Image 1: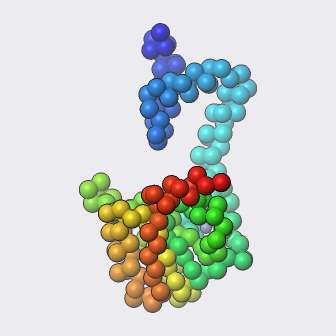
Image 2: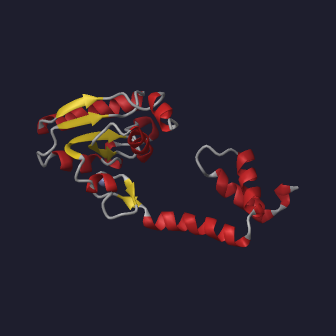
Image 3: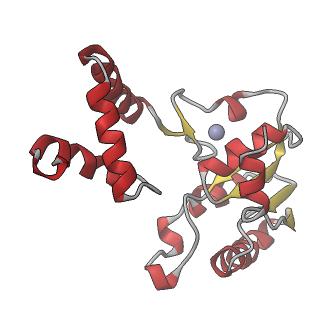
Length: 185
Ligand code: ZN
């Protein structure tokens, strides 16, 4: 019985910490690791540590990157006068797959949610304000999800951004549109 093998149990517990992985799947994943050769398992473990060590936030848009500045912010062809504000890095990936947007992004890393104890200070809002305060931003597209938190965050942002004078557009993005885009290949 798998439950009595301590290291297998421990491994399954670690997989169970991953978002969207239930107990049954966590155990399946743990068994898959056992099927690996020692070398493969080493590569697997090293990839986790490597990603954790190398990936940080882009100092401009706060998106995840393993470079000093992310490729989107570093791209001279992108229109820096337009910022699309998104909830998380996954939305950037989804939007980039569609390849229609040529501006830059700003990743908030969450939404304001008093019920979950998430305050504006915990999000990358002051970094956004600093970008808009340079006066070089003509339009901010707020593309948070059309949920209660998404709407509240959008409203909060437009109030803060208005004094700086950019055009503020609301793009109701995310579920179900976002999840649809994310899997569109
Ligand atoms: Zn960036």
